[in-house]
Length: 176
Image (cartoon, rainbow, N blue to C red; front, side, top):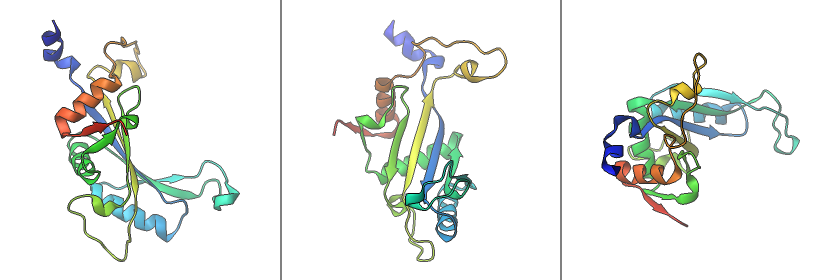
C-alpha cells in the first residue's frame, strides 16, 4: 500500500514558487544596485517593496522603498534554486523548514552563487530565498470560486519536504 501512495501522481511534491528577497533598508542608490543584481541573477524584473511603518532608529519612513523581491515559478524557479543551494554548500538546517514543508535560507553574498562575477559598480549583497512546496490539488483550497478543503494527509509535512530536497537536490539536512 505504501508503494501505491508513492506512485500516485497527485502525491508528488512540486516546487510551487521560489521567492528571492533582498532588504536593503534604505532607498536610493543601494536599492537600485540590489535591483540590478537580483535582475541579473534571476532574469526577471524585481518588484520594489515599501516600508509598512516608520522606524526612527533605522531612519526608515512609511512608504519609502526599502527592499526588492522577485517570485520565480516553473523552470526559472528550479534553475535558480539549484544555483542557490550550491551557494550554501548543499547543507540546510532542520530549523529552515516550517510545518508546511516550505524551506527558507539566506545567502550572505551573491558572489557565492555559481556563475556570478564581481562588478565593482554594483558591490555585494545578501538575500533571502524562500521555497514554497505543495502537491497537485492545492489550488482548490486557495481559489476564490468553489473553494473547498484539502485533507491533512494531502498537505506537505516537514519530514516529507526534507526527504524531497534530499532526493531532488542532494541537500544534506543537519540538526545544527
